[in-house]
Image 1: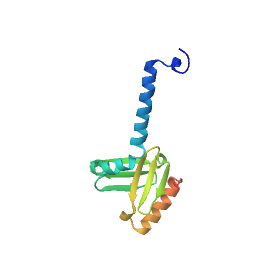
Image 2: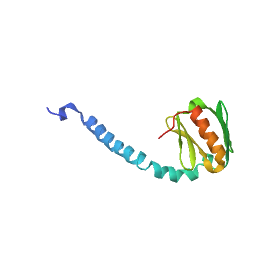
Image 3: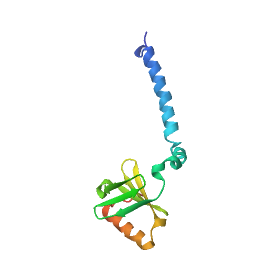
Image 4: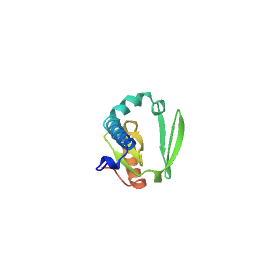
Length: 125
């Protein structure tokens, strides 16, 4: 047998079809539906709910809440962003921490803005 079919066995063709189907599922499920899944799952995640305390120091940020505490050195953060309601601190590739502005006075917001520029430096556009 010649041609393209001669290069593949029947098992190779089945795996190739499976790869295309699974790849399509991944593209559809993980990219376009990501925001919908996040909105659906966020209220169920008890560790993301409730009051938290953040202390921003010279060497690190200390976060504590009902489920535990963590100390993160400033060097762990790759960039930060500021939205109208939040300061968002990113640890590459997919971890981030949010500091809500509603919990801060305007003077505290200015101080945090300066601290983030000094410690992280890279502001996400």
